[in-house]
Image (tube, rainbow, N blue to C red; front, top):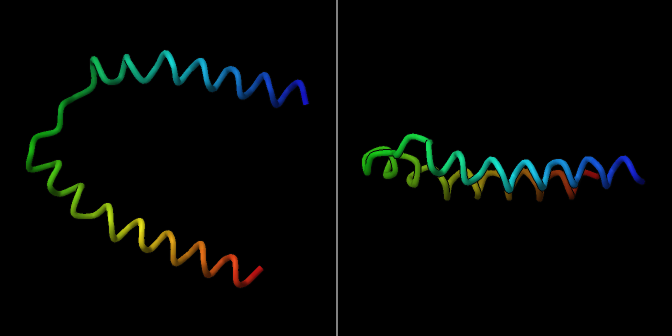
Length: 59
């Protein structure tokens, strides 16, 4: 149990440190790139929900 808490603490601290660094120095997507990505998000979420539902029925 102590190992699990240690791993979770390290991951949490890494997220606290890395997210602001990535936001500050990461590349900014253009509006065209954002439109391409946003067009794919809802279909992918729907597919993942269908797969999760299928997996829950099969187990």
